[in-house]
Every structure is written in structure tokens, then in C-alpha cells.
Amino acid sequence: MLTLTRSVGETIRIGDDIEVHVVEVRGGTVRLGFKAPREVTIHREEVYRQIAEANLLAAQVTADTLGALAAFAPSAAAAGAAGDAPVPTPADAVPEAGDAQG
Image (cartoon, rainbow, N blue to C red):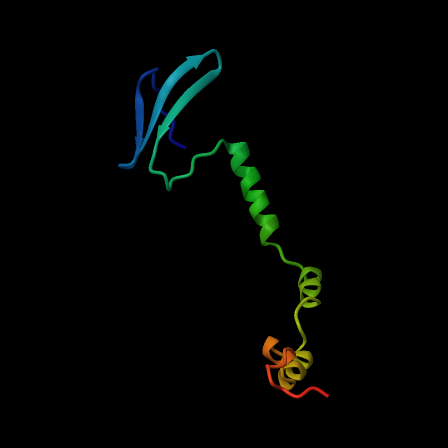
């Protein structure tokens, strides 16, 4: 780990695009300001850990989950049977004028 000493109003640069400004030092607390491109995410450590944990949980897919999802998917046999029968259309349900009924 690199350790630097800076005073209020001084800046640390990380690469060409990131600036860290020492805004205030009060007791045991340091306030920092950051300038970075929008695509660079900046989080406090505890927030970063919560995000990483949530991402890990979201990425875990168990066999139970896959089985539950499979119950909603049509089976291959049902899909084949449905493809053999014609699907009625609204035009089939309404007789045209002049058609004989009876």
C-alpha cells in the first residue's frame, strides 16, 4: 500500500483521470473529494462489500430454481400437439353476410 501525507487543499492524482482532494481534516476524520470519469465507480468500503455480496447472491442459481422455472415452460409434446391443430381466428367465429345458417 502506498501511504502519502497531504494537507487540506492538496490533491492526489491517480492516472490521468482521477483526482483525490483533501477537503477537511477534523479530529480523526478526513473528508475527501473525488473527480473521476462517470464510468469509474466510487464507493465507501462497506457499501462496496454490500454490492459485491448482493451480486454474488443474485448470480447463484440452484437446481431448485431451475426446476421451478421448468414448470412454467411448455413441454415439447404439448408444443407439438398444439402445432397440429388449427388455431381459430375471429374470422372463423363470425359468419359472413349471405352464409346459410341451419
